[in-house]
Image 1 (cartoon, rainbow, N blue to C red):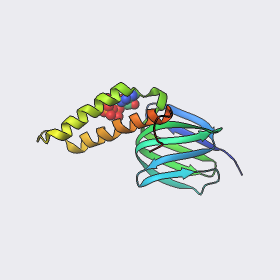
Image 2: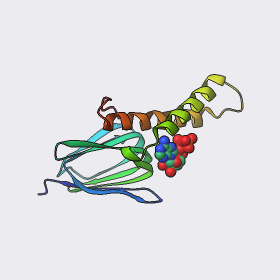
Image 3: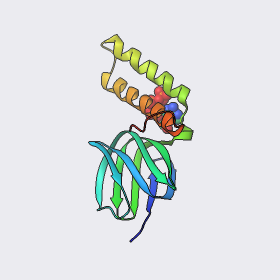
Length: 142
Ligand code: ATP
């Protein structure tokens, strides 16, 4: 029996993280799920939100947008469409993306793709939450 979990996060472009951790919380498409060592195996689609993992009493945050997580007794493998560690997030860029998305959603113009604007708004807000959680000034909402 292992008392840690090997967490791997990869995107189509790169390996984002490979680390032994104590706990993983992830934004499943139907809600957050948590994984401790020796969890039963399962597969989940991921939504837009923040994955977090605990290691030695510290919590670390990773922004995720879409993909899958495969959970095994001593391993969590995340294949994400987009993933960024909190420190990699450009907060100013996320703020501008939120402003653009909000103004598109307010316009109600025919040429606005609402689903696209809503997804962009969700990504930008999750990115800002990820950073504020990492800086300890936010609540740990996924
Ligand atoms: P933007 O309109 O600013 O591009 P977006 O939400 O449309 O934001 P995405 O489609 O989610 O952008 O991401 C496109 C690429 O840009 C990805 O590789 C992603 O990691 C990167 N990226 C987007 N926004 C940020 C950010 N705020 N900080 C760091 N990387 C970002």
